[in-house]
Image (cartoon, rainbow, N blue to C red):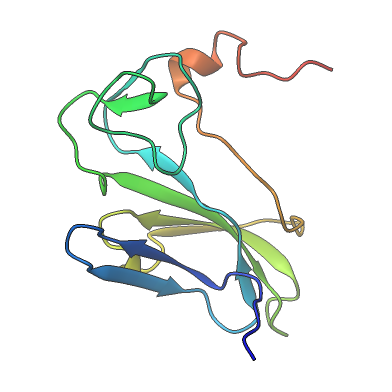
Length: 139
């Protein structure tokens, strides 16, 4: 019998070579869907918010595209992790992983004061776009 549980890490798979990189958050530490943020320069084409699977090779229909001929792994992965160990006490953290070397673990980890509920989603909005008010939600 196979069972499924909350994600406990992240994996990067190179579809061309089959190479995989894995980062495991630990027992009783649960990960949320990661957010992909390009490193360095990028161009905003206005077509969407990008996210997992955005096309770094073109500026058409991708939302975000690398201004320079970047590689897919030229990104940061941001993910929320909830630590349900006795020591963690259910606290949440934001981890930052280097897209080129996920298996090295977080390059930064921000512990939050409050637990963030499972299922939180986010979006990367470039600075130029965020200042326009287009990314703000109406109340």
